[in-house]
Length: 110
Image (spheres, rainbow, N blue to C red):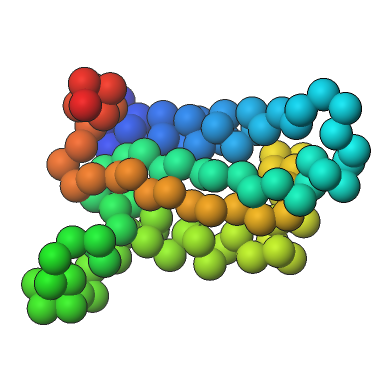
């Protein structure tokens, strides 16, 4: 099996699991549960990395872009409504932890 594909598949699987584990507190109304913020963690390799977090991005890496770098813009309120069964809140913060050169094995070792 291709390592890049298996790494991507694992990252996508983890992403979907993290986002679907949003349980509210007992006794909260639906409105209170939906006003919370969901944090979506992205884990993966260079295809997902946010290169703007590196020093001198504009001088050394631009226009290199990982898909995780632009993923936050897809979590606008109108987009979240379309995936409501997965994300039950009204806002999402994307925390991109991807690193170039990382594999599934090295992610778990770190």
